[in-house]
Amino acid sequence: MSVSLDRPELLDTRLFINGEFVEAHGGEFFAVKNPATDEIIAQVQRGGGREADIAITAADRAFEDWKLRPANERAGLLKAWCAEIRANRRDLAKILTAEQGKPISEALGEIDYGAGYFEWFAEEAVRAYGDIIPHAREGTRVLCLKQPVGVVACITPWNFPNAMLARKIAAALAAGCTVVCKPANETPLSAIALGVLAKKAGIPDGVVNIVFGDTPAIGKALTSSPIVRKLTFTGSTPVGKMLAADCAATMKRTSMELGGNAPFLVFEDADLDRAVEGAIAAKFRNAGQTCISANRFLVHETVADTFTAKLVAAAGQLDLGPLIHERAAAGVRELVQDALNSGAVEAGPPASPDRPNSAFFGPVILSRVKPDMRISREEIFGPVATIMTFSTVEEAISLANDTPFGLAAYMYSRNNATIWKVSEALHYGMVGVNESSLSNPAAPFGGVKESGSGREGSKYGLDDYLDIKYVCVGI
Ligand code: SIN
Image (cartoon, rainbow, N blue to C red; front, side, top):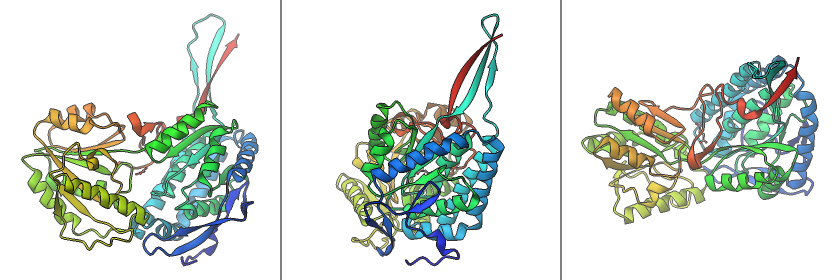
């Protein structure tokens, strides 16, 4: 293994079930690769349906005790886990960079972001208040209890291997649920490292379980089990739809944080330097592999040339990491070629050397892009900025909403009336106004339309893991 750590025990390759690091029954492994070098970092245990079933049983058993613990005790354990994560942030970031490819500065940022969810939900755990509602019938009292939904399946992607798990697990545990996690096979090492620290922090056996390997078999075990009462997924819209359909047979609750096609609107009165700064963050964070990544730049025709020139200059200073693998880079390259064939023009930055058979690609900025091009309709998931123009506020709103997705949108304007009109008219779950860093634990993260349902983080994030029980008391 080629990651040098202060605490080498963080780099485990086994499944984490019922508080133990275990091998898979089939005796099979799969390789985890470094996208920057294609080097194999580790051979990891390949679990399957059998391991998922064992993990579900462990989580179910642990739930009986965990749900009864006082909220402040659960909060204390989440804080202890958070402290372990913060104390080991450098090692966790090194593991993350090795298996995911993002630069170490971004990996450190992700570890801090993830730790923030543990802290946030430790503090929310003690605020899962119920209600007493004024009764409508004499001689009765109406109570609402908030109770944990039960065992939760958490399926997470490779683009934020630490933070996406953190914001699901922290909320679930705070509510009194137990979890079976299935991280992406590209990035299981960050998940296992979290398991190592969970154990060290004293999270009771079976409260957190982590399985990976045979994705379809594990997915089937999680979606079909009547014990699992909720599934929370971050990933693509097609997979989210499939999982939601599979969950219907047992009527599980679901939270789906799915794909996006974020518009980034720049109005003629915008502060263009601020807009470019926001554009760089919204487009090129994680090399564009973010669900809330700006996918379509819609710029007023009178400022489009200036905005484009400034964006090209800023993008020329970037030092991007690789995409997750060569296949991903090839897909983005193909989208760019399709746009060029359909009339788009490469505006810059001055040729960064293309490395065709690698995971490296871009940055690329395309102008003269049209709404009906594939690159405007699909989620790019790579470091390509596409620029279209508009001439009226109404046209901007209509172009922005012309997609089945509805996760994040951004707008830059100095006009109060435009800000209110546009932010209210955008069919999106999140809107950045003169600001593009939307993600933080205090904020409700989530989308509308085919970008999914449910909210993660914020005071609302706990509700996704709580059932309301109505108790009618006769007096
Ligand atoms: C995502 O890409 O799904 C999450 C991004 C974030 O939390 O900022």
